Every structure is written in structure tokens, then in C-alpha cells.
Length: 93
Image 1 (cartoon, rainbow, N blue to C red):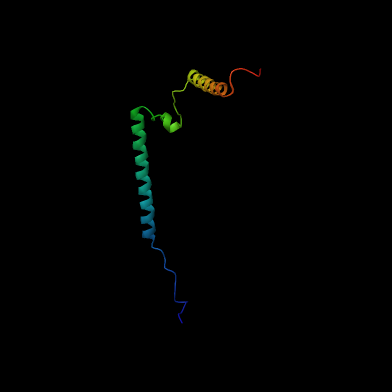
Image 2 (cartoon, rainbow, N blue to C red):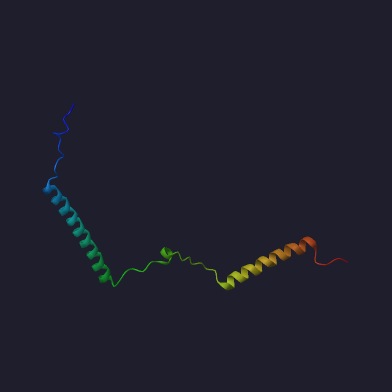
């Protein structure tokens, strides 16, 4: 059997704790310096770069209202032509 009364929890070393905190502070300062450098570069360029149409999801096509109407007209003519050739031009006689 072990004597649990003799086992005392290890006291954390204050110097280790201070060193960890200092490392976190140093990392935060480095991140802040990086952010400031990025901000200075953005200001130097004259502002943020606007997103491209592709990044915004804008799709450009060559279709205009006129082209769409012309395509629809051509499709309707084609279908009417097939119907008239299939059933003839005249009605019942």
C-alpha cells in the first residue's frame, strides 16, 4: 500500500507560468505587428482591392435580350416547321 498522506500535489512553478504568459504576449505582439504591416500596405495601395466579378459570383454571358428573343423565334419557327411538315398545311377538307 502507498501512503496517500505523503503525496502532495506539485506546486506549479511561478516562473514557468510567467514564461508561458510572456510567450503568449510576444505572440500577440507579433500578430499585431503583422496586422499593422498589412494595413499599412493596404493604405499605401490606396485602399482594399475590390473583389472580382468571379469572386462575387457574377456570371457574364454574351446573351442580350435581342439574342434571346432571336433564339426563341428561331426555335418556334423550327417547331412550327416540323409540325406543318408532319401534319400538312391545310385543315380538314
